[in-house]
Image (cartoon, rainbow over all chains, first blue to last red; front, side, top):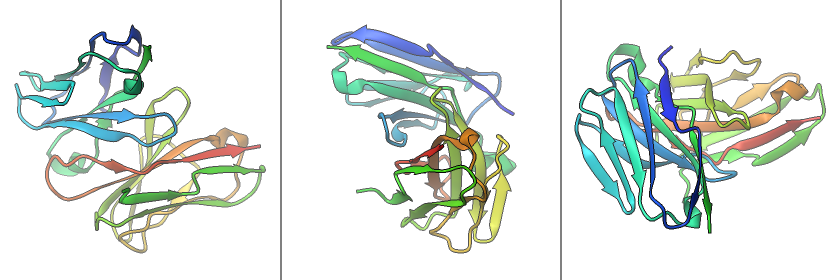
Length: 114
Length: 113
């Protein structure tokens, strides 16, 4: 099946630092999504991107839909301890049967040291 | 307030027991999914449904089964639990709008001893 390469796998940063993570694919996606999973909870949608080149912000989070439609980036500025968690990228193709399923990256585990 | 509910949140059971993990959503979504998540973080799709009486196996082979008799309800059953079934199980649903993401439940943490 399709694969998303998400990196880095984990990050250990100091409070106040900026964070960047990305996902790449060999296939084109029509939608890119970024989720955050807090410990012991299910993933929660942070940002959705629907157009190549789109740059969208949600508070301190900024995500971009790559021009080639094969990648996406998530940046977190001025990290705080509650940013700790697992961040997942997900891609969706709007064609045929794959329209209903997301392809997830393997996640980036973020640890923020106060 | 959550629109998709999973019960129980935590379950510890003995080997050989039959269990059912419940998942219900109040959003009227046709599409529902079950993911298995090991401590290594990765999400593995094990079952999905496009609507009532529709169920499909996901990308990861699983000994569990699912049913979809009502739109809002998508339970997952293990006929005979084993220690290898120990994992986090996440349920999700999605509406029909193109590009719409999933809404996840809080998960069930299953431990089989």
